Length: 597
Image 1 (spheres, rainbow, N blue to C red):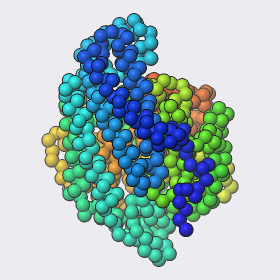
Image 2: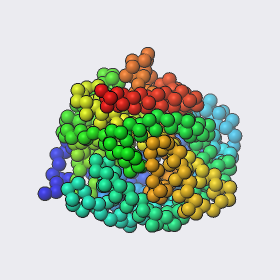
Image 3: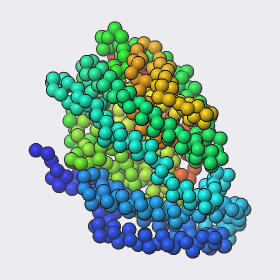
Image 4: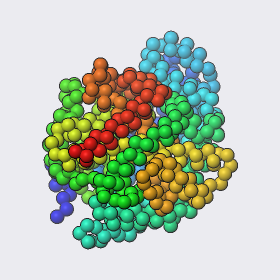
């Protein structure tokens, strides 16, 4: 019998009551925010009348932003608890509309500020010491002066913002709702539907027939819709290129990286460095081919387990205890603060029907972080919990050490803390197991993580960069162009000792991250940084633990590059990436020695 959400104990649910005690309190705050939107209008054409006026506006906006964030998180969480409840669907939709109104109501602020030089603001910062709290925010605004339009033009763009989301929205609807991939005969001989969600299970099956069938059926289905997906992706690319041009960037890539102060050289060096380090992956393919007893290794074999999956079932309490032990290397303070996630209602574990798929972490500055997952007791699920709690602790320390306007860290460093936690968990398990088969599985799992995050995401990054460059140069890219490019990149990034199956050329059509405007490269850079941090901590490098905790507290008070320098990593240099490949090669060698012995 299916267990409904109401059947789970409250200890397994997050505490949305920390945000609002009731829907009625939420509605009251929502109504007051709608009324408060009108309070922005009197500031139009008067923002720089005086230091006090500028402070009043920013102070008011800070309090408004805290409340609208809290309203958004509340509706977001309730909707995701059970996506089939119309009441919370409507609530979540209304908050999106409120954000749209907020965007329109404040669209005059930046253009009006930028009519004057920063020298005016610098003078006001001296006149009113309270304005110092917003010094970084103001500097960030003026950084965009050359890329900001007039107030009228910015207002028009804010009204059109939903239109720019259309390719992504249509992609999601087509992929998640309309596309059907048929059925796969599983290990028990039963027909089971193939979906994007079930694909991972099939592609990781020890049965090669199942892996191949799932791989071929999924990608050929995307191939059947290649014209539609090509139109969607190129509409997204065109949008990015046109908006970059409107805002006077040299390219969409430059525009995407500029906001986080990331030099273009980091993107390009990532691709160049990974291309130079394909050899360790080829070494792994040779080992995998021999371990699986195959004469030829195909792409659909790459996720096949080398040994039996660890089947231990963890209770929620066992998972919590394991994480506290594995992460104890981060110190007593970290462990003490992490315990709050388990005792103060940060995590929602319930795998109830209707709950949003996947896992994530979000936060409200006024309250605390929240983590969603559907806990099934598997080791993979425990690793997911470690990942999301890495995000949660990053939020927690930033919230407790920074002001609201300075707490939300950059996307460039967002995946660092989550990956550090996962690496530390894996290393703890490897070092504390005496079962050789379990050790093989754990090392192979780390290798697959590296392959998926460094090699694969960098391949995505090169594909994304290339199609933007070619579209910007005036090329009209067809589905054949996209397929040929993607196939050739697969041959480069998978390297030797593997057969790159022709059908992989359709895989670009299923990647949602291509609708996120130069996002994917950050998975690779963050993972390389996380490896360096985790290994420095495990090897007791001087001040590694303290420096990492200091990094977690920074929020956005430093640029992402400067933030990572606090941990001893300079991403403008190749050291972190080169160290990551040494780490990867050592994992392959360690696995090889287990087989040889």
